[in-house]
Image (cartoon, rainbow, N blue to C red):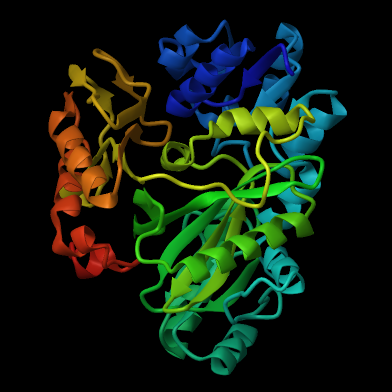
Length: 447
């Protein structure tokens, strides 16, 4: 096992990794930008190295600075967390070249799954169901129109690189397609440095369900259950629950088997997530995230496994500590992502100083956060303040505990989405588990 690792990230995920490392006796190195000099992850790590100015491009995305920090401190491995360099094949390859272990899959697996068009073709070869769409990249607006006529409207134009809704545009007619096709390419180029796009049939009202996987170097791939991530705004998840509600055991098994085939096809090692769109009794491959997910705590709670620990075990070349292709899950868990945003003003970011905060606790409640009284929330990074996680012996108990936790949560000085999450979990649709990706528009009347 590693003696020291560098964490190439910030905020709650950096703290999350530090906690597991401390339990395992692994020393940690934090990196920080000028804006994060007083950040909690800097204080909790065993060592900390400054890597640049506030903008992420000059600090947390500076590969050379992070590699130098690892070499300077004698870190044997780098954990990228999520976001930033976590799915960057170039960075994974650079780590390998410098003799530093990248805690995640190898560059080849990241590259295969990171290119969405290539990933789709790889999944088709592995007999994993995919959404009908183009046979590769769509390189002109005339080709886009031809594809749309073949698969039928509505359609999605999607960036081949990246995700999170960037470079993704809907079209319900040829007139709309002619307008959004160049927009999608421009947005993809600006966000990912690559303007390549492909097309898919737009599924109406699907659920977004994902399977959590862990895999080692010995070919063992295991499913740690599934999550429903359908409540999202502009393809950004707001609330997740595990296990997915209302899925039959037969369909759950089919999805897990498909996810395992996907991982084995690319010789995957580490933890990762295969995401599906689900309509009625059918499911379709959406993408594979080759990193730890923001919503991993709810899977940890129902499976009983520390997912960061599993990452470290796999990265160190050790065998996973469980047998079989899946693990039993117990109870139900819900996660609410609390962001520094103003729902009353189109979710506008709300940076500033936190004058006072109180994070909930108690039976069945966990909070992953890096905020504290007097903290300055920076405008330079993701707006997430905290992840509130509630577990119960069943879904109803988890909802009651989440309701209690959100009422106990206090964040003053800035605007947050806490009250918005309270309203979500009180809707009849959520309480019944009858929702899909159109929940915010149809139920909450939010675009």
